[in-house]
Every structure is written in C-alpha cells, then in structure tokens.
Image 1 (cartoon, rainbow, N blue to C red):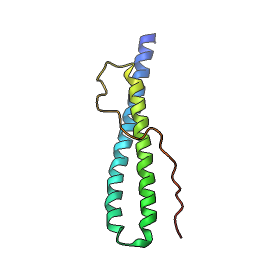
Image 2: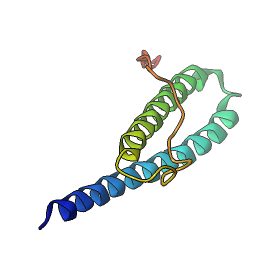
Image 3: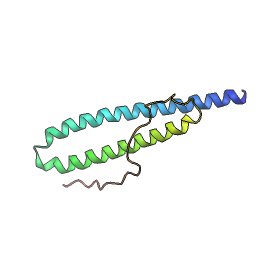
Image 4: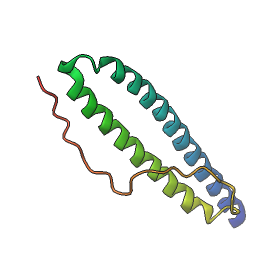
Length: 106
C-alpha cells in the first residue's frame, strides 16, 4: 500500500469515528429532550425533584463535554480535509465542564 493510500485510509477511518461520535451526540440530545419532558411532569412531586434536577444537569454537562470533544476532533480532522468538508459538524459546549455532586437524598 502506498503512503498516499495509507493516509487516505487513515483519513477515512478518522471520518468514520467522527461520524459515529456525531450520531452518539444526536442520540444523547434526543434522550435529553425526553428527559426534560419527564422532568417537567415530575416537578409536581417535591420528593424526587432535587434528584431529578441534579441528574438532568449532570447529564447535560456530560453531553456538552461530548459535543466539545466532537468539535475538537472535527477541527483536528479539518487539517486533512478541504475547508468546509465538515461544515456545521463541530458542536458547541463548555470548555471545562465541572464535576457535579450526584448524591441522591434517601
């Protein structure tokens, strides 16, 4: 295999990995939406409200971190692709997500 064929293969492999991450981010965004709907329904019950809110915000921060990582991968991949090949693919999110205390009241 020539050097250019190896480079092309590596580029395609990286693109496939980035595409898989983008699909995972999309799936998580859909789950976050469903979670938000359930959370809105359960806000009437004070016993579970705090735990649900804590879990929801922890999930959202993890999703934002994943979107940020996807954007970083895309930017790194842009150096091997023509400009604009991945337009609109990079996610937005927090630069340095902070950990959350996930203790659930018993």
